[in-house]
Image 1 (spheres, rainbow, N blue to C red):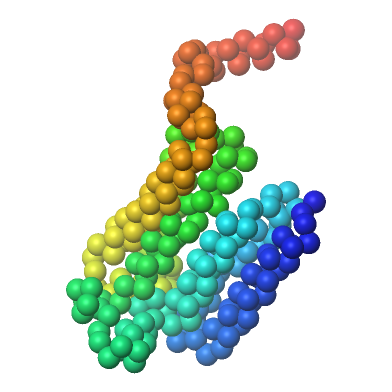
Image 2: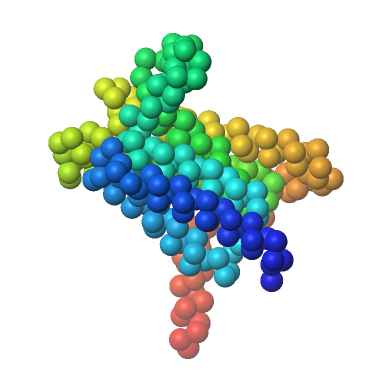
Length: 245
């Protein structure tokens, strides 16, 4: 059971996101692209809702997920290549944000790909620790590995969707802005974000966790010296034959 203030915190996050999402659902820049961008969000939200009775994240993880979904909602409303952060910065400061950083394109998509790794690696770590019982090195490596693999999968989904729908919708969904290395740079941003998140987490744990070094060392030791592969298949076949007798 979870304390009322814990549930209240999660409910507040959901309510704030729902209000933001509803506001940004009104007259998006490209309705068809908005629908495509929100398809995975819907699946993700349904997954969180379906699993919440069995797996509850920490407040930290829910907050990180909330921030990421808010960034994605903004990108879906404008399409990632058209998010007007440059115009907003000019209105506030009178200067060009892109020129200040030496950018020649709209990099909001890069920010969100970086945020995918930086903001979601810790919630993923919770899953690996509590479901897969990952410890030590593996508790930090697996979130990074998962981030990179799902980033590659998402780029393949983008490619397939662009090929399927084609035209302006395909271009808007891909959001390459003429960069032939866009997919690789997006994956690199996500990987860098996850790496930074896990380095920060490891540094905090090294400071606070007394058995940090021992757990890390234990996680890299060989737990079973028997080779698997054909040997394991032979063992299972022998067991199966023995059960039939």
